[in-house]
Each structure stands twice: as structure tokens, then as C-alpha cells.
Amino acid sequence: MPDGVPASARETATDNLPATLEAAGEPPERTAAQLIAAARDSFAQGLARIAMGAVPVMLALAVTATVLLRNVARADDGGEADETGEAASTAGRAAS
Image 1: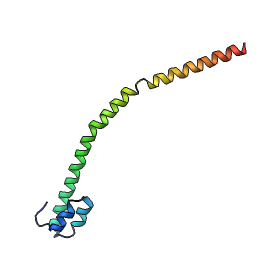
Image 2 (image 1 turned 30 degrees about the vertical axis):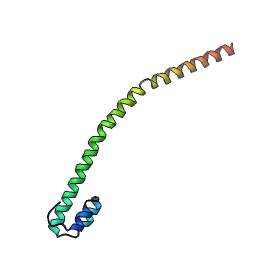
Image 3 (image 1 turned 90 degrees about the vertical axis):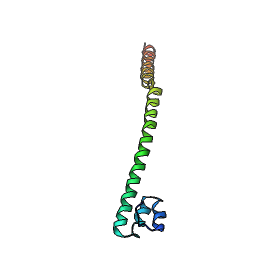
Image 4 (image 1 turned 180 degrees about the vertical axis):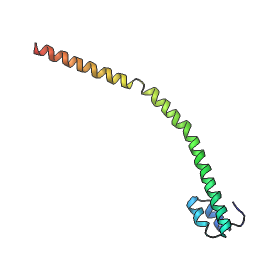
């Protein structure tokens, strides 16, 4: 937090980015610019940390889905072909 930021603005600025931008109107212009820069930097760092934490989770889910659904397409394709073949055979026998 930059020096020269009033206590009330400090408390508001620690809540969230929009509150910080609102609180930046209280201190002098130079201090307000420093406050906004610090808030944006903190926001970007927090977002990067969340993204880096989400990457392993998304990769684990992708691997799990791949492993669990690996044979689903093969089972569907084979099942439809067998049913269609059986239906054609049955229809052919009935026509004879």
C-alpha cells in the first residue's frame, strides 16, 4: 500500500478492485495512481495464482474423462452395427 493513503481508503481498498478504484478518489492524484497500480497488480497476481491452481485440476479431469470414455465410441459403433445387421437378417428371413 503506498504511503499517504488515508486509513479509510486503506480499509476500503483491501476489499476488492472496484472498491479500491472508488477509494482512489480520496487521496491526492499521485497517491491515487500508486494505489490503483498496486490494486491492479494484486488483482493480476491473484488471478494468475488461481489459473495456475486450476490447470492441474483441468488436466486431471481431461485425463480421467479420456480414460473413462475411451471405449464408449467403440461400444456404440459396434452395438448399432450388430442391431442393424440383426434387423436386416430378421427382415430378410421374414420376406422369404
